[in-house]
Length: 211
Image (spheres, one colour):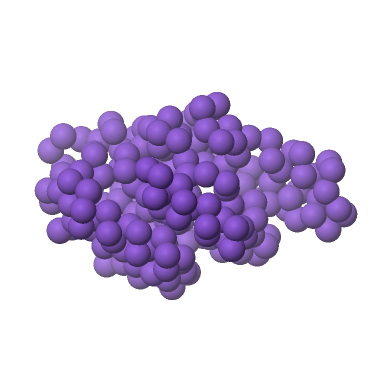
């Protein structure tokens, strides 16, 4: 755990725009994010795509609900994080149990190709840090990889956009409002659940959308 936090903090200092937080997600947020995966059918294999896993705080919850016959792909842009994830698949017993049907892909989401859609798409990307056009593009790819009736689960920090639209510079307020418009539209059309997670740094919402 200490190594995970040190790795995360080092990358946060160097690449805040793509890391987006000062600490890995808590186990309470990880449990909320995996709500629908935990309710999966007992006799049907599933395909899971995790986007932006970082050091694996959410991954650690995901792997515990995977079984033989499943498929688990992780798309991570940061090579340091990807190396950390691969090491955990080799050394952590819970991760190693699913290593045979799991793969870490070091590339942008926009370049990732899959042979079939996914029942669960789980994202840890810091969308509030991105340009508006990129946020729209990412959501397009979320749904492109999602199977019919599949569930997209992602988190965002509570009230960040609200605060930044009120106290930021004019350009920042405009960017935050545009991102709010994009995400609110998707939530109105597709959201099936939202969990409030206060035991996280900072407090977060887990959003669940269904295609």
